[in-house]
Image (cartoon, rainbow, N blue to C red):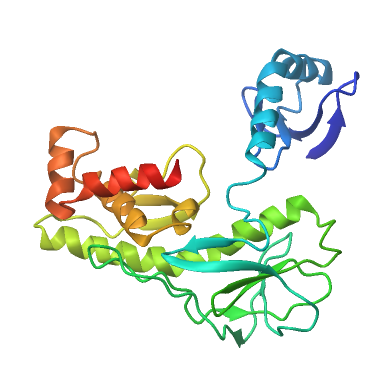
Length: 287
């Protein structure tokens, strides 16, 4: 159960999620929502005391978001960004200019039979990097209530259902996060197979992992060797493809060595000899 509440002094508005959890949990989302989860048995007064004890943390997190100027994965209109190694301009759509849209509503994406006329195409990485591409994905027709992004040649065409000066920021954020996840699936799947082949060619036996793709704030990727799962950060789509390739190699290396030991870095060097250079370039690029 979820409800929107405000502290008695009016200082903090928060989402309260009642669920089966042992401890109370608090987080500030990237969209600036203060979210608290607590057991149905915990009194409201105790929850509000918990929030007040963490007031400094909440205020700092909200200020940091304000200083950043919004979500890192939500580009400004009329700007140019690099997507999987290629430059694209983000443009607000004018009425009746395009008939097909990649629809990412506030609920979930819907698919129909209309295909993209202009797939995303990117450059290769330094070690035969996977092509950054949006394959012939199915798109749904836009309508007046759609928050949508579609690819037209070298343009990311954005559509809002309301006046461009007053879009729902939470829906805009969800639209972009869903868009990145959608276009990234094929790219990361191809990259996974490529890196798997590179490990085999280097003499290492590794599993074909289950791939997950999501936005993360503190890491570029993760690997769960026992479950054979690799998770990649959608932020890697916003840059040269060799950075995603480097991170994928790093995560695959954990199937050979779980820790960052000397053996781990030997595996990295065997598969990707210039990994140190790519790592340094990546750090400079995203800083």
